[in-house]
Length: 416
Image 1 (cartoon, rainbow, N blue to C red):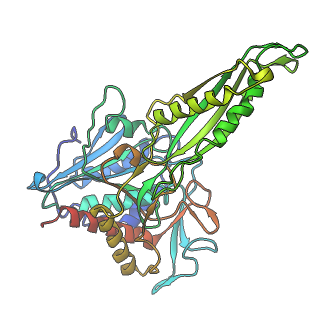
Image 2 (image 1 turned 45 degrees about the vertical axis):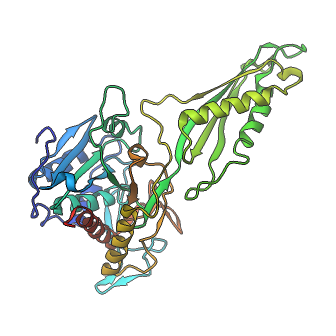
Image 3 (image 1 turned 180 degrees about the vertical axis):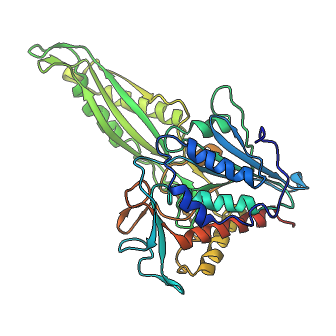
């Protein structure tokens, strides 16, 4: 294993790689408490195939391929994560059951098959597709980087360090185009809302509840909640993501049942759309809450307000959006449709350009053109899939995703 220098292209490096077999093995590796065993498994695989991987930046795995003409094409980065959420769900492969997408479908060899278990779709299925494409790639122009992060389901410290967003780190990627592996049902997802968390701190003056004295922070929460409820009134909807959303989720205040409370805190969850930033949201919400308190009367008079973003070691995942007409989007969507047809998926499965339903580390790669793509679903008609006890992915979708990403890499980094 090296320090991450570019590996020579090797057209045969991935010739014996089977993404479905890889996924079967990967799902059996617990990675909810630590990604270490999963990372070792992937590094050994890359090492065995001469891909010269490196572990850098708080546990990220990097492997690179450089064409004979690196400046003649784009630098394409394939990214996904190695960790999963708790609890670990055991591996199983078998016929699709009622409620699982594809349960009524059949192939020439029999009923549709699925792989079940933690990470089947989030995100070891997408990882299998990216690994297949990286190992098979022999770029004629530009560069290709495989970048795997260790803690996307937690604080994304690996991705933040990898992209130079943590103090003392530098951008090790500097990509022109990013393809991020997540369960999208083989759609090319071009945008996602961001997620911020903040606390609205209300500070008053304590007094005996029997006296007409003090400044009641809990009573002032009525005004603060009104400001939160109307915060987005008149806001423009994003063309891909729709309107932002602000939700009060936790409220705490008061210390004694016979005391005018001096303090109250409201936790809010923010789902943002471009171009809003975390700091821009914090500042705007602080202004709105303070304005609401200027009209307060009676025991709410004199309450002050402050809004603070919840402490995080890594930056919040902000919203991102890529032009749906960008070449990367068109290439991924076209490849997904062709690959789906080749394995017999229904014509309405995959190939659309749409937003993604959850925040991802794709946020750290913007504003570079970024597409989120992979087999499986966050949820299906029967309920939650990713992060759920019933997590699964269709075998044919893994095969289609692998073929699609391989085609994307060949198209973007092939001879013009």
